[in-house]
Length: 257
Image 1 (cartoon, rainbow, N blue to C red):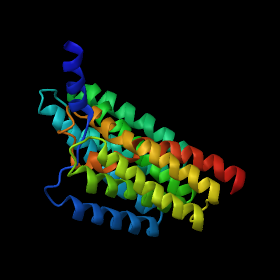
Image 2 (image 1 turned 120 degrees about the vertical axis):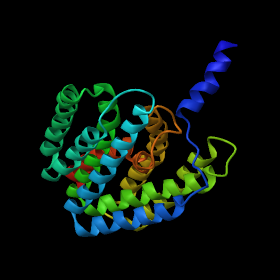
Image 3 (image 1 turned 45 degrees about the vertical axis):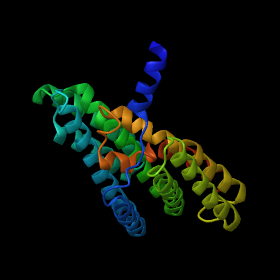
């Protein structure tokens, strides 16, 4: 009996169903337009956009933990989350230094402000790494970042359209995966960005496999799945996809670019 009770509780802790209420669709379209404009403007614009989203995501998560009684400084988390994507403009070394600076800022700043270190690290580091990875991808090949943006957006559209009205936790992610595979087919046929046909299937397939992991990860960062803020949900699909995609992209371009 105890295990059967624990399973639904565990599912409620990490599972996320998109909500059909509110202007989610319009905000999603605006986000896609803003991201496309940032890609057109260049790496610095991408860094500013994703740093802002990572900072807001971190602050919203810190506030959610503060509501549970864990004292933490939202501004400290926001600054730490923004440091990594901004420093990633300088490349992989800047990215690595940015992560170290963010961790140090959270640890030493928490001591000065009497803020909860664990909450700060939990709220800031993963959004910072995801945002910084996006900047590195754009710095490496902006065409590849545009392809990734379209793939991620396809997943989000499929997940939202089906998941928000679904009775099952799996309908949304499966629809998102199907949408990614449709876009991947076009990517492989027309060879957009730096990808030849086989690479298109590999990189598109990677998004299809990894994108569903973002939502439960975002839930794990917040006190509950329901308390994960809008900015955190905006970034969640990128959490696993962006770092691994960036690593594979660098390796691919070094061999075939």
